[in-house]
Image 1 (cartoon, rainbow, N blue to C red):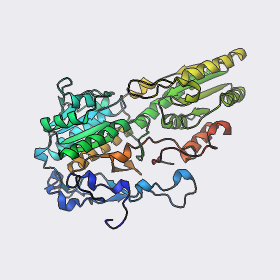
Image 2 (image 1 turned 60 degrees about the horizontal axis):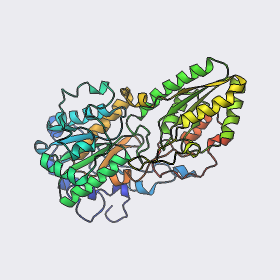
Image 3 (image 1 turned 135 degrees about the horizontal axis):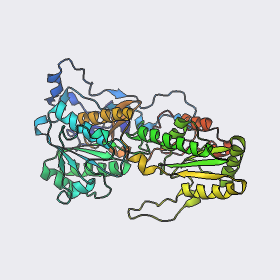
Image 4 (image 1 turned 90 degrees about the horizontal axis):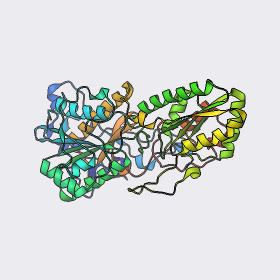
Length: 465
């Protein structure tokens, strides 16, 4: 690999503490630079460890004709697996770790906190673990937001609860102050749980630490209920969100079918990406129209389809992502952080359809469950995924990597440079198998399917694309 062009996915020498200040590319020779024996090798002599250079193929589909399935150049050299290796960089007895949750709530935060704490303590003997409170605020100003000590006893049952025991929060990022505090507190492993904004800031923190030669392994665990993180199959909490959203859609179906000419409308999370709405529509299998940010629509087409569906079935169910139809409800405003304030497409649809249906005796039933969905406890299969992510984040950090994120690629946990993960947002591709399957499941008309649109979504792996 040293004699060929290496894609960004496998350009990890800059992300390892042995070579992060060097101008070099490619994979790290961990067998040479990682000098300490993994404690698990002594605890379980028969344990099978990874080859440190074990790669997962980034592009697995050949001879594709659809644009949504073309090879991604960023993944061309493959993706390094993020599991345990026999040799590690850090001496476990000298490790002090911290974990921070940034942004809003998401199912599974407590599972991640629990998993990281348990893996550090049980597999590596690291018991000095801090839970940083209030997101980046707690790293920039720990006096105002004191950290809490995490123990296996404290986290033993937190996965059964929603939310985060260390409090999630937005804002507060200051790379220089955080580096000062990491050095002062003696923290040399830092786990960042958050979305693309958190990981973008995490990459800035990694660069600031590198300039100071402050040895700290900064490993991101991407979080997004919208599943909009680039390249990885899915984010934790997404499966739970889809499961709970499907239950709400079922309630809308009951309401719509229990009156004459009823239309159930459910607004779901999905500011820039429609994955929750798309998957919930498929999972519930009672949705007639799924509306996502990636597919624009004309209200005349919506009204015509509502009339046709209600005339045929006497009811209808609509699932709409919160970011859909912003061309109809744009506010023209931005919040204090510069983000666009989106108009309420759910209320817009409700009002428009109520006015349209009322003369013929119809009505809508509108449900907005967003904060209920993000605060629920995680479902079992999602918790399993959290355990995998937490364990492999710890293994990655102990191997000496920094400025990377962990996540599933083709259902294998890999690490990617944070700069790559934070370079954009993943979106639904209108010509992907996933969206076309949703169109077919809902029996949507061509006018609302978006299949005439050229795919211009961020070039990240969609999973089942």
